[in-house]
Image (spheres, one colour):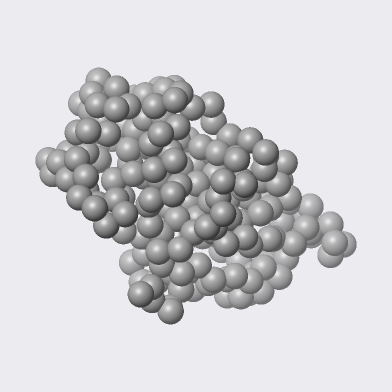
Length: 209
């Protein structure tokens, strides 16, 4: 049974509340081994929410609580901002070939082969570009052992069929998952397929002006 203590909780959180892309009076709780869609008005508001969860931003008002030592991975940080000097092999923990998905033991090598990603393993992560970087991000999220996964950019990224198979594994079989969806991209996100996700809506700040 999942813990009744949330991994993350927001209570009446405000940031940049006088701006149309800010957040005002946002409250929600995210529990372990559950899945969520956080609906926002635009990409800037999505960035605010992600930044608050990731600890990049601090709220101007309200309270955010996180589980101690909570491990958070964000597809946005992995795809764009985070400079990782490790080789992909090390980051993905390939010394151990096994990981767990839906409580079943799986082979990392199988999914590396499925993605045709062997060529990326011995490159430093920061040198990966385009499809190679997307493959690395998908494998990072798929192999994650614990904590919280934040997905935003992958929902709007063009994926090959092999990438889509891995992405669906993450969406439907991984644990500790948050899916942050911009309202303007609902159709491209195949949101109707995510029936097991709880919907959280962030208020439009224009309603508070």
